[in-house]
Image (cartoon, rainbow, N blue to C red; front, side, top):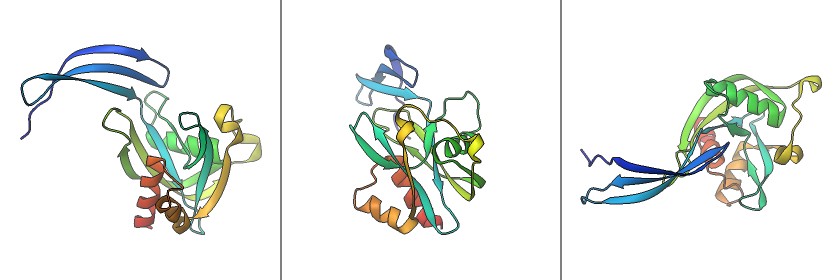
Length: 182
């Protein structure tokens, strides 16, 4: 059994609507302590929407931290208190890709950057896809207003991962897991 690290002090550095940042002082196995900055957030859901032709829904979205548009899967923060993550995934699929799923099952879980973040992402596999009626579609805003939505054969999406064209960690994990369970 390993050493039990304990937080002996915490300083809150930032509190925001999406994440908080703290500096923890943590006991180390050599007997001293070390300071560790931690980004705490609510987590997210990601959806691998796989249609009957073996294609997945990809979204190209602007990500300001990277200053670029990148390929991702439909996704969103778990920002509704106590909402079942599968319902969050279904809502995000409808909002970002105008689709519903007859089946939604958990595929894989990912800690996106455990060296400094608590972010925990649940990736779902959605099947039996159907379009959301035009009258019921979500009005997209901000970065989502100009999403590029397309469907790509799952094997081509995996090839995009391996060529470095899809780099979003949860998308990489979800696409590779979907290819494995297909």
